[in-house]
Image 1 (cartoon, rainbow, N blue to C red):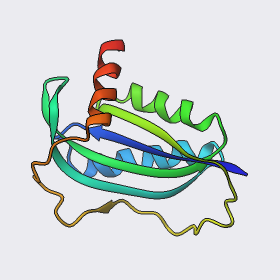
Image 2: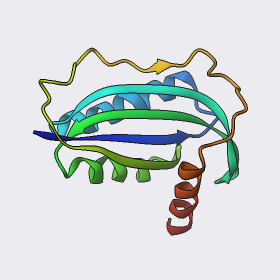
Image 3: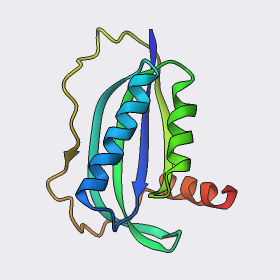
Image 4: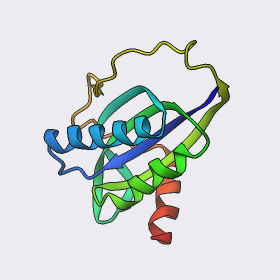
Length: 138
């Protein structure tokens, strides 16, 4: 049995499609090498931040849903912290005990939402607040 997590992270707005794909592959690797399994990886597009983070007013939002052992979050967040293209991140544990067989495992590819580019929506307050704390501690 594994735990289920969701990590929302924000990538610099000037990142190219190739860089976004590289970041996806990097985090897919981090999860699978820790005996985890990515359930979904959704690029939510470029959105306006509630406030500037590292001199950026916008960022590419990405939501990653995955299964893994208890130590997987520490490794994912360590890699997020080390990547200079990542502006902020937050991880939430969705379930304590999940049977990987019961969760439908499909081929995961980065998905984009239809209205992704330049939507101008505000960042979720919780993610933005966490991002501010992350920036202060770095």
